[in-house]
Amino acid sequence: MRALLVMALGAALAGCSTASAGTSQGSTTPTVPPSASATSPYGTLTIDPAGPDDPVLEVDGGSSGHQTFTMVQLEALGTTTITVDEPFVKKRQSFTGVPLSTILAKAGIAGGVRLTTHALNDYDYANVASAFTGSEALIATQRDAARIPLDQGGPIRLVYPDGSPLSGVLDAWNWSLASLQVTRGVGT
Image (cartoon, one colour):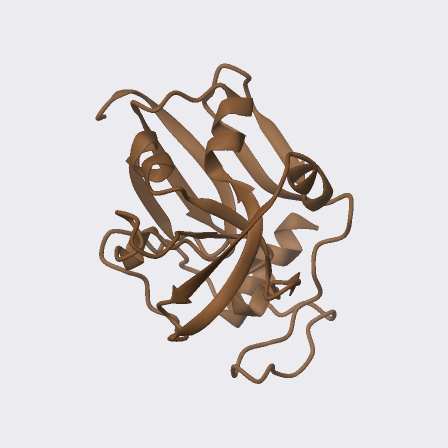
């Protein structure tokens, strides 16, 4: 299922640019799965969401080892809702999700290690974990009280409250978040 989602997302996001701090590593043209319909209002393919038992987030490098989370498991950790000026669509939107600090604590990830966020389309952003938590990063599972469609940056994405240090760093707003990986050591 995950491979199918990655292939479909690659097709859906074809032509999307990545920010300078990220990397884009796709070298083959993905095929569109039969579950994808024509196009969404955003000009991209509409893709079926992950099923209830499908992992939507992988976390590696903490003292708890490799962990995966389904949407239900993420939300069971406790959610909060914030309303922000979403910088890409340029309007106020409410996001509900799990504070990244909760995930990092569960995974045994300390604030001084380098953390890389990785999206389904191979976009990466890296910073020290304390920069994310100091900005009150939220792993959003819903936007405006509804699931975030994959073709619109879902099923989960990283968002920041207005005025937080990373809220103005567009590279840090990782859409279609797939994994968090740790590189051991302070500032490495």
